[in-house]
Amino acid sequence: MKNKLTLISFIMLFSLFAKAQNEPVKIDSLQEVTITSTRIDLPFKENSRTINIISSEDIKNSAATNVADLLQQVAGIDIRKRGTGGSQADLYIRGGSFDQTLLLIDGIKMDDAQTGHHTMNAALPIEVIERIEIIKGPAARAFGQNAFAGAINIVTKNQLKNSVSANIETGSFNQLNGSVTVGSDLENSSHIAHMGKLSSDGYRTNSDYDNSNYFLKSVFNKNTLPIEMLATFFERKFGAENFYTSNATFHEYEETQNSLIGLSTAFQTNNLKIKPRLYWKRNQDMFLLRRNEPSFYRNLHISNKVGAEINTSYTSNLGVTGLGVDVSQIYMTSNTLGDRDRLMATAFLEHRFKIENLDITPGVAVTYFSDFKFHAFPGVDLGYKISETFRAYGNVGYTYRVPTYTDLYYSDPSSIGNEDLQPEEALSGEIGGKFFSSRFNASFALFYKDAENLIDYVKANTDDPFMAQNIRDSKTKGFEVNTSYNFTVNNLKQNLSVGYTFMEDKIEDINLDFSKYSINSLKHHFTSRLSTRITKNINFNVIYKYAERTQGLSYNVLDASAIFNFNQVELSITANNIFDADYIETGIVPMPPSNVLFGLRYNFK
Image (cartoon, rainbow, N blue to C red; front, side, top):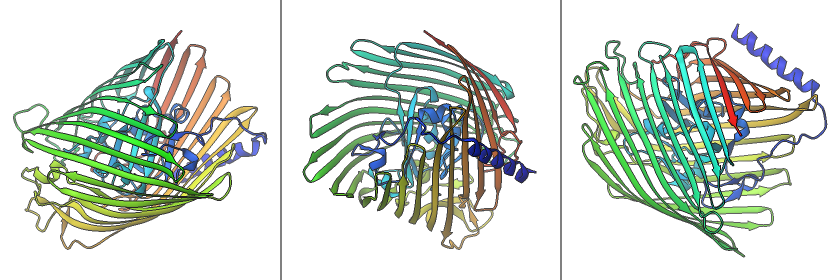
């Protein structure tokens, strides 16, 4: 039945192509978008790296209500959720683990020394996001620690003029969401503030949540030397049924807090750009093994990261030189991991040579950890402009990840950390190409990763506890293709985007019977989105996702949304998992059945 529905969907899509008109389509292009998450700012079409961009228009047409759901629509991005509302989701890129992908907010690194399980706790409300930059493979080495498989930079909006927008949503599982977003554009400053509340009774036992989002971005002194301030606070309270155990009697519960304060500015002349930044990131995690019996087993971890960084780029006759230095101090207090602190310092240097249509960008990252000493990771990017519309590229480099405090020091009756763990390392490479036109954009990449010293929890006997070990070596290879086609029907804009990733992991035999983190990557990952404007006031979006994992599990998921615009009022209907697919993304937690969410947004003038 599912295969027939999939076939019908594709027939409908291709029938739209047959009706498409031939005149050029004037749809905003990403070709000139400047990628700001790298040391050297370059237009998107000039980058010799695998970079995906989710634009503000893509976000609006995504049928997604949070960043986790949004990223799931990108081929090669594996979001493994344990519930709804973005309460708990792990982020994977190209087969890497949840500890091996770095999340950034306006270029600020949001890595957490406790565990990568908290990466998505820092994700912003989609109302304040301008775009998301996704950097895959060895090019992510520029960010240092945790960018083992890739990095994702969420770029916030610069201004919203003078506006007030109120939104309320309700739907299945007694979901009730409300938010207010305010923009103020003054003579010498601008401000964006957002406050949101999301709650639900849950779609199964102990899957309820109560989440709060607070966001503030201000730019002062914007007419001379702008100073940007960013402040966020996110709190999540949720039932964690079988998130980390299989015991049906525990009824786990978790509360997390994530906050960020950042200050930055930029000094610029014709050839030199200097961008200093100060930031403070805090994460708090409280976990109860028995929700209604806090004294039975309780974990409380509080981590603080205080840092300063400066990024510079200098343009000369020899090309563009990028230099970055980032120094940070981490403090952790935990009833199970102990009191820990770590000093980190990273220096990155790269230079972009350009000889006619060829560009070569060698670079190296050198990192010092007070507990793991020095590590250097070089790499090089190459690109060749074959024509005005097509660019070929390739890059190769080393990436790394130091163990989290959970890897090193965690201890309970079933799992034990290991203080002797060494950093994970990988040599990665890829070749690819990008094609741009007003109507059709496409990119492809062949990638390879040879990883060593991967950390896994293993044991030889059933009754033994799992212990963290540098036990795995793996080789990953694959390819990905992404396309976007713009066309018109009755002079109305339409877009069809399709992405596909194939990946194959080869794991060396570890000669042990039990492994806690067995490889379960996305072997096949297909995504597509049709955004069709039915009238000037009605926009309809259909999102289809197919996933097949290395352990054999496969599933199809179809989502859709309809948006109705009436001057200051916007009505929306979002339907997820329309055909009620029965599937699991991680562990033993089933994903939600088909559900619907109704929304009303009012824009005050």
